[in-house]
Each structure stands twice: as structure tokens, then as C-alpha cells.
Length: 411
Ligand SMILES: NC(=O)c1ccc[n+]([C@@H]2O[C@H](COP(=O)([O-])OP(=O)(O)OC[C@H]3O[C@@H](n4cnc5c(N)ncnc54)[C@H](OP(=O)(O)O)[C@@H]3O)[C@@H](O)[C@H]2O)c1
Image 1 (cartoon, rainbow, N blue to C red):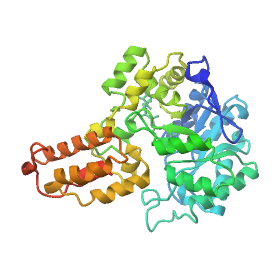
Image 2: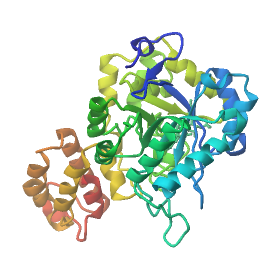
Image 3: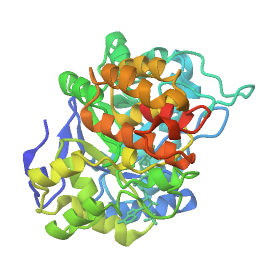
Image 4: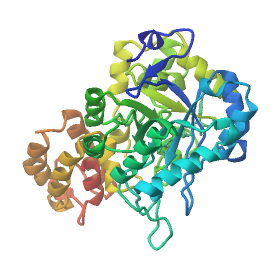
């Protein structure tokens, strides 16, 4: 499906043919958090050559995720481009799940784009599989009236009505996507996922998308999620990205003559994945698009280096997130990791080494690559040291008390 000339560096950006029969640009300009600058930055992005925009409609009864969809419609109206030249991606908030509720959300999204939208949206995604506490606080008004399967039926109906051209999901894991595909009459065209060089797209998701012709679209590729997103309370909480600063990423940038952000973009594009990029700075918007289309590409050795970065597991990063987040982070099948977490929850510092080798490694080796085992061992050593213990090989020097951090590293 992917036009090879793009990844080899054609002069212009390419599109990918989705399983819906529509074409989507491989590079999309993201509009989250642009606030009052949204319309102006979109016009800059369109001038720079972007032809796909990522937005979302706010939920009916509450706050969304910082998108300003009416401003996208305003930019479309102000731009001189034909509507058919611009690919609009929007999303339904999980609080709006439910057959009828989702259909209403789609109608609202289409009307938010105003005349510039010309009555349709190119790709509508379900934004999250469930309405977590984080998005739908208990006791509040943001209550879904159905599951993601009910919401999907609402999207399918909107395709029949001509309001949507393609439909898909984002932030679903492989199991959730599989469940959706089993119930779907119209296959998801796109699966969005957060990934960067520290946090690859989970292999199970990659495999499922490959076998069902679902196009992966990756966001957060520059690694700011670690320092400004979910990692903002962590040791790495600072304004730069640990991915862009990683020595291997910088070395590849030096040897190829590409910038570090371009290296991150090519890493995903060369795997056949579409990407979403964003900036409030017009110069960066222009350079990013030019970089993605640059003829230079990463060679096999560079790709292998980036695939093998142990960024997160190597970083002693301490972030606050749900167990689902940690499971997704290391890229294994969720159901396998449930098994691991059950094994892990009984581990305590006093017995950590013995349990680690006796039960943990033997059990984990069945399905976790050695690189993760080694990272977990280093994480365990670091935990022991941070708590005043000595060498991990010496059980007598272990601290007393629960090793909850170790559990998090391993699940
Ligand atoms: N589906 C979903 O659930 C989901 C979730 C998150 C995001 N998204 C989409 O993906 C888009 C991008 O996500 P994101 O903002 O999290 O990630 P991102 O594009 O990886 O990172 C944006 C950050 O990168 C900085 N940046 C951009 N170019 C740079 C460069 N050349 N050098 C150094 N820093 C640079 C920007 O700062 P400046 O503005 O100062 O340049 C901004 O702080 C969003 O706008 C949204 O549309 C979707």
C-alpha cells in the first residue's frame, strides 16, 4: 500500500491508500494545544505543504483534549485550497460512546467545521477505547451510553450517510482492536498509537494491523511525552525531549546529516507508518515537512540501532501512570503481561533476587526478549541501590519493604 518512493525520499510527500479506498497523506499536522493560534498555525502548515490535519470534537458534556475544531473549519474557509485537497482527521471522545450518542457527536463534528468542511470528515477515530477516570471523572456528566463497539456502529452509520469517508481508532491495544474488528461491518482504516524511539509500537498491534490492512499512524514521535506528558512528574521532567537528546539519535543525525527530529520521523515512515507532527513555530513546521520528504534515509544499521534503544527501560524514569500505560510501554501483548503482573505482585525486596531468578526469569523468558530481562535486572539493581542497598547479587544488602517500583518495571 505504501508508495516506496516516499521512504526513499521523493521530492514530494506521498499518500497511503487506506482499506476504505481513500488516500491519506503519510504526514499529518497535529493541532492539539494550539489554542487561539490554531487557525493561523494551520494556514502556516498548509502553506508549508501539509495536506492532512488532526483535530477532535469536544465531548457533549465536558472538556476534551485541547483541540479547537471550529478553528480548523475557519482555516479551511480562509485557505484557498479545494476541500478535496485537505484530509481532515477528527475524533470522538469516549464520553460520547453509544450508538446514538456517537452519531450525534459525528454530526456535531461535521457542523463544527462549518462551510469550510463541506459537510464531511475524511477520517473519524474513536479517541480512546474506554472512558477512564482520567477522562470521565466519577460523578461528572461525562458518561458514555455504550461501548466502543456501540460507538463503532454509530460511525458505520455515519459512513453510510456520507458524513464520514473512513473510520478508525486511536489508543487501542491489539486485543481491543481485535475485538472491534470481530464486531465491525466496516474495517477500521487507521489505528493511531503513541510511540517514539524509546517506546516502539507494540509488536502485537503491528502484526494485527499488517494482517488486517489497518494503517498505523503514530503520534508523539519526538519523545516529549516523557518530559512534558505522562512523564512530567518524573526525573526527566524538563523542557527538552530525552529522545531527541539520546546519544544514538544524535549520532545518527550527525552521520546522516539529518536533524534529530527528522531521524525520529524517518524511523517510523520507513516502517510504513504514518506520522502526526506538530509545532507552534512556523519555521519548524516547514523544516519538519521538508525533512520528511528529504531524499536521505536511515540505513539498516541506523534502523536497527533505533529499534534496540532501551530508552525507557534504561532511564530509571519514574512516572505516574496506570498499569495499562506500563503494559503498553514495553510493547508486549497485554494478555501475556497480565500473567507477568500476577507473578510479580508478590515480590518483596527481601526476596527479590531469589524470586527474580527462580520464578521471574524462568517464567518471563518464555515470552519476553532477553533485552527486557536485562533491563529489568538493571532496574532491580537501581531500585536496590536507590533504597540504600548494595550489590543486587548480595541478598543480605537488600532494603526491607515492598518493591513496588520493581513490579511496575516488570508488568
Ligand atoms: N490520538 C491521540 O490520542 C493523540 C495524542 C497526542 C497527540 N495527538 C496528535 O499528535 C499531535 C502531536 O503530538 P504531540 O504534540 O504530543 O507530539 P510531538 O509533535 O511529538 O511534539 C510536539 C512538541 O515538539 C516540539 N517540537 C516540534 N518540532 C521540534 C523540533 N524540530 N525540535 C524540537 N522540538 C520540536 C514542539 O514545540 P514547539 O511548538 O515549540 O515547536 C512541541 O512541544 C497533536 O497535536 C495531536 O494532533 C494525538
